[in-house]
Image 1 (cartoon, rainbow, N blue to C red):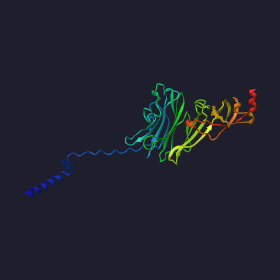
Image 2: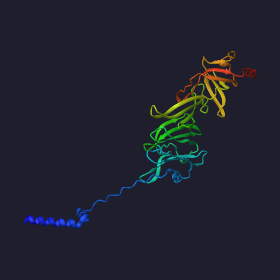
Image 3: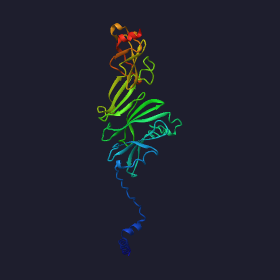
Length: 342
């Protein structure tokens, strides 16, 4: 009898399973977990059709907009330079980079200069909250897309003029975003002032003043550089990094009037770049004065017109110091100068 009972029970169970189907088996197995539907990534919209006013700080106006591929993959990112009146002679500048967030389906900040690298110490502070907000300034001198790092993405070159009452260092940075966040791949600060510009070949030229040593006889103050250093910045293919590829030094005054003569220094003044400039030359025992019957450096007088040949090559010392040696001083209009002394 036992085998017959077992067989009958199996037949009954089989019939129940067939009659219940999939739904019946689910009920018998208990409640099943619900599998959430996978979100479908939003398609990247055209960056050039995005309204920009909602993205920038309240009260700011747009000064410049760039579109470029800062991140790997499809679609462009948006670079916005805007500024706002804060009651000072200069405006408060803002620099933002926006990227489309696939997960949220909206444009979000990838970089904000007033919060990078940290809100406590930003690249461009928001001076509206400062009690002396008009004392200092930060003005964007350059905002341009460049291709320096390679790999199919673009980089962002930024130059920021700084100062407090008078010009301070010009800060030049090249940012890469290809890893998903701002990374500085080139960084330089001038001694005082300067200018940066984008060249036709995509490289960046940085110009800055050079100064004599403050402890030396050529120093004429922080407002009087001796000349200009020009650097061309781009990708060094040999080393695979962004670096200075070319540089040149130019003195302001090779031809001008004697402003001051010391035992070991000659200061010459001239008109350069539309303003009066001073250039100091160190005098040595090898310095010649022409014509030879004139005498030596000690016979030079203030106001005499001279043409100075500096010993080559011109070299920068520490802290952008430039102290050229006068190899030859040619006195011009010699007879007229002596007549005026009499």
